[in-house]
Length: 241
Image (cartoon, rainbow, N blue to C red; front, side, top):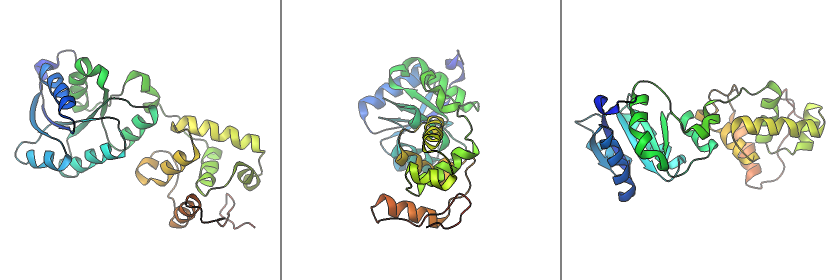
């Protein structure tokens, strides 16, 4: 990895901001990689790669949010074996974890682009996953316990801590403890973020949480839109008053 120049790889670059794109391009070329194509959008990048398939796609963005990861998914829908690296101005642990769960291979912060980008491109093309060291928790997720999964599924339906405690025959303080532990493991900070993760089939993969049925999705959606009380079910799925 230390001699990226001798292992130059063909790279396609997607950057909406020209100045940011120029900085990323300069780092790639300084590291010995060749830029085959460059575009400001995913569709344009795909059009430029019809006859020249890159080994890696590098996307420069403000942060690894849903729209940025959607560009990765668009590119991979056509270029299935290509590696993907995001270069971001900022990224919190939850952003990094979501991006990795959705198929991004590497993330580099803008402040480290000159020294880190070229080696990271080489690493992901060799089958590795790379993330900034200060976001290492994103790739060291701890498994959820059975009770944490139960509590999270009830959170999705919109139940309060006291209602969850009644459903599971627990003290409310115990429910709070389970939620705090689960939020830490999932790198989320609110009930809405936890619910969004669980309701997303791709992000839920690997958490050990079973398929979320349409009735649960509908009830969670109704609760979030203020449609009033939802029908409650116990942890075993029984209807409750």
